Length: 113
Picture 1 (cartoon, rainbow, N blue to C red):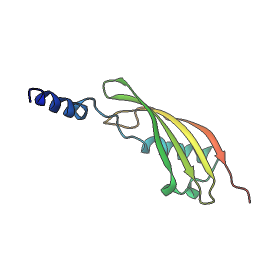
Picture 2: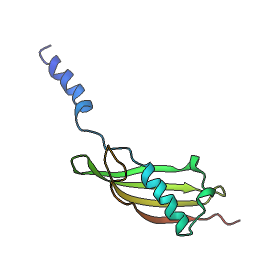
Picture 3: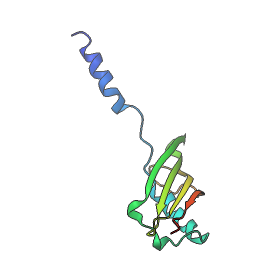
Picture 4: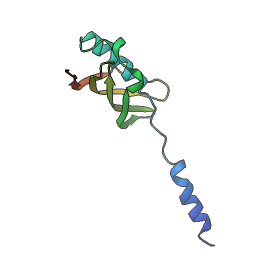
């Protein structure tokens, strides 16, 4: 019973530890869709947004409330073609658009019938 307070503190500690990085996937996703359109890779109005896969690959704290975030997006169009893009940008809890978005197309899969 002497260790009960220590056990309780250790059980609660992970929930009290570090602040979570901001969830800012919308900013790089929207900028990347514009980039795909401007680069004439795909018509963004043909994308099926409900199938978009979003993965936060890395979030590194640079300064107080400033994070560099790396996202992996997989966009699907209505014909089943996929466009995989990696993005890099800076974000904070106050503002997701702390920097421009660097987008890199890593895969463009087209289904040919």
